Image: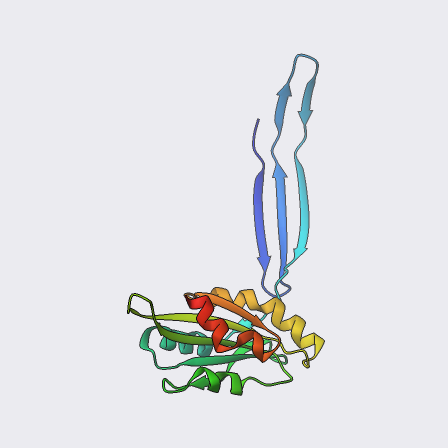
Length: 184
């Protein structure tokens, strides 16, 4: 029995998958009957389930500077709906605090943020953990909430090395006590 050949074609313009499955001729013998199948070609198209957002190089470079060089304390990302790109909205210097990050998030619009949290363990070791914060306040538009929710995983894949994730709709859900509790 021959196994089917599978051809996968991804069209970058229409973002469709075309899956072509071709069966070669094979013979199946049993003691009751004899079956001979003719070659068959099947084609199916699937729409990609991603939102089609692009993450700019500035986002990747700023994250790498924060992760390796400790140049930034936090980075706030936003989605530009017209160009369908994730861009850097604000960058916090190494001397800024978590309160500066929370103050930089808008009350009526969604954002992503990455925060570099430095702490000392019970063994008196200095550690640093990266937190990904998905900020989606109740006052933001429903379209923005949906766009940010569906694009979150794509951005998380690009930002390699994040330790914890916090989803917040209210400032109390992302307080410093929540960050400290997750880090320990």
